[in-house]
Image 1 (cartoon, rainbow over the protein chains, first blue to last red):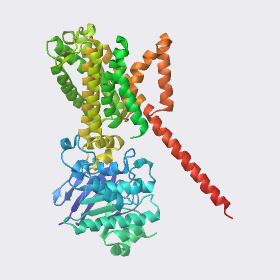
Image 2: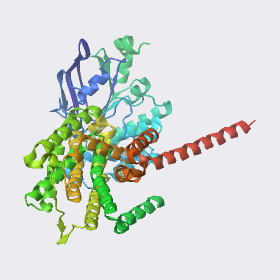
Image 3: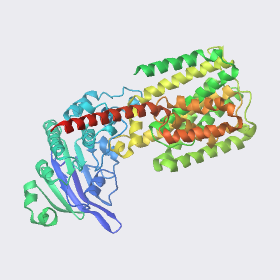
Length: 251
Length: 328
């Protein structure tokens, strides 16, 4: 059974059909890429799936359950993590606190957390991610004081703190130097593998413009053009697709 | 904790505990007044400084606390029943005032809370049957604690100090629990907070409600302290003054309200030498402070540290550059 199933998603802004009948499925353990030119509706589609904006029509299912119209908070509680196109760390908190706050709401009830220890019993989990992302040397610094690349790593690590089943990453490599792009790719492969070997697999949906990154990392790729799905297939299939070459990859 | 902050803490505790017995009645009264405002602005600091919600209605909760205790005392009901009722009333009204914050933010929220403050002030002024109107309520008795009468100024001061310490410890514990991080996350980036499963609506409402409870406790102490209340201390102007105290001390700094309230309550007394000009001097001081220290007095150590670090960094760069130049 598919982990995420999106059926006939539509969202218009006035006369502009930003997302125009998009359907796709993401399988457990899969890394699913979404590519397309700027303005092709990738982020609008993302934000509709994630409850940030309300789609006009369409149905979104997670593990067979209808999650259409749920708030971002409810989606996160059901195991959907995300990152944003721009950096979204909590600048005035330490890196460690950024990670702790990213999962604390999954521990107990709100009232049980009142006056509870600050790390919510998540210290070991935070430390493991800090080591995995190689940000130990800045763990006690305020996130806002770090370099862009370091903040990007914190930003991505936060999405994994609550061990979500599905993570949607919006341009994880935007503005990142080439050596760190390789690092992020390795990290995502690790995170996909470690979870995939467990009882529940973790899957990603990734929007990205860096073609080498996408082709290397993703199991399947969806190409969006003008709000519509142009093609879905493996990296090899997408590379060989005449339509995709003409519309997007050609130049 | 640094040696400096431990030394400051010890000195402060010594002043609060041992100085008042040597002061005249007015000095003791002023210390009590200061601590009442410390309690009120600690709550406002939670709402504004930690949770990032702009509130210009805090004096209304201060008023609810004061009038609840005063009206109940006049009806022959004990302070010890009035105090929890004042807290409960403020919590409920605070929750209600939080609802506009779910729809609007920043200056629009500030105006919504300002409107609430004005409406409540009008109730205090016009509903004479309940509040005594502009004549207010006088001869408000001070309570007793375990049979000990707190009528003397000094005893009542120590009672207020005890309450302030308890309220302070509770806030410290709350802010160092997961709730503190959730409030800060809500302030810094509500959209990201929501995507991490944080119920931003609940935390927004609670930041108002808990802040209001602090104002309620402060008001419940204020009424028996001054022994006479009327609507004037609970105007929008008073709310702005409380906001100013939080900002001057340092919004989002735990000890900010302690310093900010001192500036708001004690500094005007020191400026008495300026007589008719004291408001002018006070106003100018605030303008200058906002220009140079927009993050408040407690941001000074952070600023100094940042300057030292950037100096060290530029020295390191200069040293590295000179090494490169030396090479042939």
